[in-house]
Length: 296
Length: 296
Image 1 (cartoon, each protein chain N blue to C red):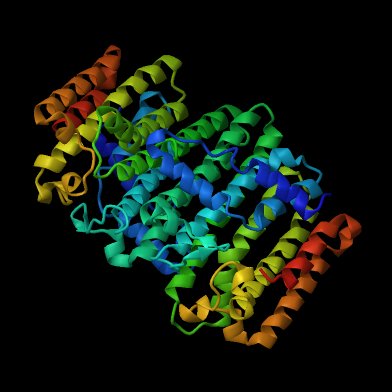
Image 2 (image 1 turned 30 degrees about the vertical axis):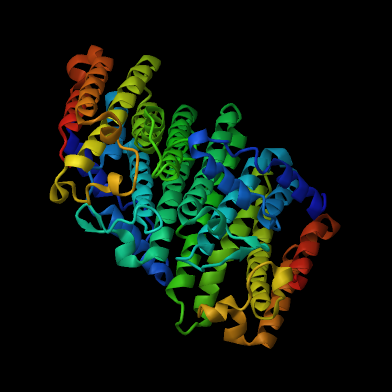
C-alpha cells in the first residue's frame, strides 16, 4: 500500500488523459472542463478508489479510468452546485467558480460534459476486456456502482433534498438522508468500485461498506462544522453558507458539542470496521483520523 | 417491420419503467423528470433505435432500455437548453418548460438526473448478460455509441458551437459542425445502437450510417426552415428564435431556396443509401419522406 500523496499524484498526472480536446468550434467546452478539473481539490474520491483497488490486491492502473471518472462526476456536481440558480458561489478552492469565468451557459454544458465523459470513459474501458469475462464483469459492476451512487437514487437525490428543504425545519432524519446521499454515496462508490476492480472478497466488501458509511457521514459533519467555524482562506470557499441559505447543517440541528461527539464516534466506528486488517489497513485508518481533524 | 406508431407506443408505454421513484425527500426530482418525459414529443430517437434493431432481426424488447436511455438523453438536453442561462424558452411542445414549472435549480438537477439515469439504465442492462458474451459485447458497443454521440465529441460539442458563435458570422462549415453534432450525432447513435443490438451485418451498418447522416442534416435543415416559416401553435414552441438569438441557421446562411433544395437532395441521398433493401426498408423510406415534409 502506498500513501495518500502517491495515489493523488497518479490521479493528477492522468486526470486529463480521458478528456477529448474536442473540435476547435467548441474550444471553450474543453477549457471550461479543464479549468475546474485542474483547480485543485483533495482528490479524495479517486484516491479512495485507487487505494481500495490496491488494498484488494488489484492493479491501480486498471482502476485509473474509474478513478478519473469519479473525479469527473464530483467536479461536475461542484460546477452545477455553484451556479447562481443553485448555491450561487463565486469562489471554489480559492478561485473564481466556473460560471464566473466562462458564464452560466458554458458552465452548465461543461458539467453535462463531465458527467457524460465519466460514463463514456467507463464504457470505453469495458471494450478492452471483451476477452477477459471475469474482469469485464467486475468492471461493469464498478461502473454501475459509480453511476447508481451518482444518480437520482444517490448524489442527485441528496442535492434535491438539500434544495427542496431550504428554509424549512430540518429533522435528524432529513439531515441523514441528505448527507448520506449528497456526500456519502459517492465516497462509498469510490471504495466499492475500487474493491470490485481489485476482486476483493465479500467479507472485505462488507467491512469496507461499514467503514465508508461512517467516513461519509463523518466527512459531511466535519464539512458542516467547517461551514460554521472554518477559516475562509483555508477552506477556499465562503463559510456560513448553510445558515445564509437556510440549509440543513449538523451543527445547527445538533449543536456544536453533539456534532463533534458524533464526528468522533463515527471515526471510531470506521476504525473498528477495519480493525482486523491491522497494519495492512493503515492507509484507511490514517484517512479516517485525517478527516476527523481536517480544517479544509 | 412495424410502423412508426407501433414503436412509439412501445416507447411511451415503458418510458417511465427505468425511472426510480426516488425517496420522498427528493420527490420534486421525480416529478420534474416525469413532467418533461411525458410532455409529448415525437419520440423519433427511440423509435429509430427500436426500428433499427427490428430491421436487423433483433428483439425490440432487448433494445428497449437503450431506446428509453436515448430519450432520457434527448429530454435532458431540451431541459438544459431551455434554461434562462441558455436559450431561455418558456414553451416546449406547447407547454411551459421545465424550469418554468419547477424552477431553475430543480430543472438543472432533473436534467443531470436524466443524463445519469440514461447511463445507469444501460449499465444495469449489461449485468443481465454476463453469461451471453456475444450479446454483452453488442450491448456494450450500443451503450458506448449512445454515450459518445451524446458527449463532448457529439451533442454537447454542437450545443457549445451553437452558443459560442452567437452573433457571429456563420460559415457553411460551422453550420455543418453544429448540426452534425447537435442533432445528427444522437440520431445516428439511435440507428447505430439499434443495429448493434440487432446484430446487423457490417454492410447494413455502413448503408445506414450514410442514411442517418443524411436524415440528420435534413432534420436540422427542416428545423431551421420551421424556425423561419413555421406556425408557433403547430411547432409547439416559439419560432424566429435563431434570428433573435443571432444563431446559425441554414435559411439565413443559404437562403430559403437553397435550404429547401438541400433538404430535398439530402432526402434523395438517404433514400438511395437504403434503396437495395426494397420493401424491407419501407419504414426508413417513409420516415425520410416524412421528415422532408414535416411541419412540427
